[in-house]
Length: 187
Image (cartoon, rainbow, N blue to C red; front, side):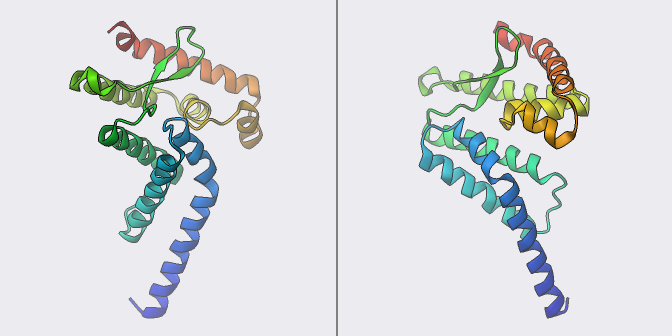
């Protein structure tokens, strides 16, 4: 590779990384802060996530959906931090009793043992699989509202879809997830 071409490629990568950071940093910070009580720990996780993005970009690892990738890495980093330090983080999600949406659930405490950690991991894996089963439109509105913390008003403005349609899509997603994850509630 010619030196001028390599420099241009690195500059393009740097611009793409800066764009991704500018586009996702605020939502990602909010996502992490809802799960990690300590601001410094949340900032460390955010920095780790973007460092991993830089590393993946430098290694030419293909990332199709940068936003989704960043949130997946952030969730994994929060879980890792919880395991290492048993932080008072919120890493698991469970359906609320009314079925109106998802509510943050506290992770198992250290004194509950490895079984609780294992059950928590199973819940996250089942949630991920259940989300993958949803039609794309339902999954997108559910993830954006519940996991990324975006308002229906901002989603409607960004997508051009009415708030009522977005609410209906989320409702169908919640009904599917409630049915699919019912056995976790019964445990």
